[in-house]
Image 1 (cartoon, rainbow, N blue to C red):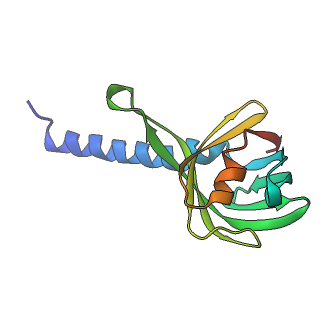
Image 2 (cartoon, rainbow, N blue to C red; image 1 turned 120 degrees about the vertical axis):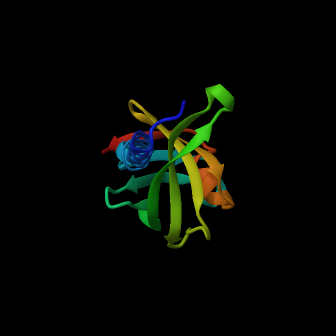
Length: 145
């Protein structure tokens, strides 16, 4: 037995609204804030880094006290796992960017904030420097937001 057309439309509409809320709400809800880490032995990337995600969906990346990248961020989710264990987790798309160390193209990262720590995990990004600083050198410390 199928659902009556009116009930089916209501279920589809509710699922659409719930999906949109998941993208607009929880995916970006805890991301705005300020995070820092210090990199050693990374050549031109060595130094004190700060990344600040603003509620207006812009971000700035600071190296040794100077802004080196500014860009836009978009909250989203990505699917992890397969089959019955598949679930959606918070992610952020970064770019376009401008600045001295700006990357061409966009990058997509899963993120997880736990207490005073923020971790980014690359989903896809062709930019080696952004991958290195953001995800491959360990977690960031939450300093504001």
